[in-house]
Amino acid sequence: MDTTLSRLRVWPLWQKAKRFVVSAVHEDSTTGARVEEFCQTLLRSLRQTPAIDKEMWLLTELRTSPMRAVAAREAAAADLVIVSVHHAETLPDEITSWIELWLKQRSSRPAVLLALFDPLYLGTSSSIQAYLREVARRGKMEFLARTDEKSAD
Image 1 (cartoon, rainbow, N blue to C red):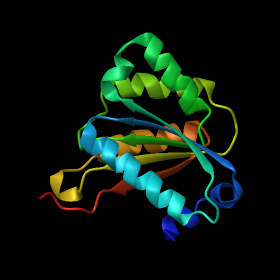
Image 2: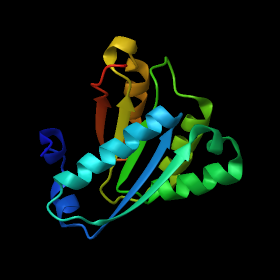
Image 3: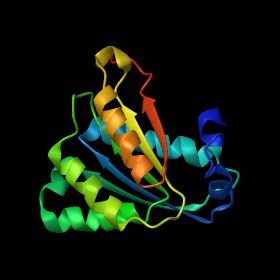
Image 4: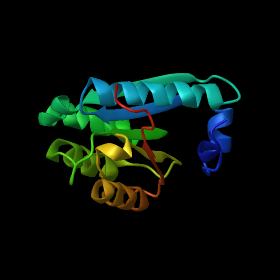
C-alpha cells in the first residue's frame, strides 16, 4: 500500500466506500495517462474495490463557460480532485477559473486535492503547488502533490 495515501485523514473513509468520485483536469494525453495510473494505484491500495465514477476533463474543454460549469459541479462533489499538469510558473487560466468555480460550490464533505507533476528533472512547479495548497486550505481539503518518477524514453 502507498504509505502517503494511508496517512490521509480520509483514508479510513475511502477504504469503506462503496462508491468513489474522482474529478480530474489534465493538459494532454501524457498528463491524462498520469491520472489513469494514479487511479489504478489507488484502487489497488483500497481494501475493497468501490465503484469509481471518474470524470476527466482536458484543459481545452474548460475554455467554454458551460463546460467549465459542468466540470466545476463534478469537482465540487468529488472525493478526489486531481490536477495533472506539466511544470510551469502558473496554471493555465482555464484551470484556475475552474478551480475558483468549484471551490465556491464545494460542500464540507472530506476530500483530497491531488497535484500530479512531471519528473523533477524537467523543471519545478513550486508556485503552482503553493497555489493548490492554498486552494486545499480554503476548501478544507487535504492536499497531496506527486511528481512522476519515471524518466522520459
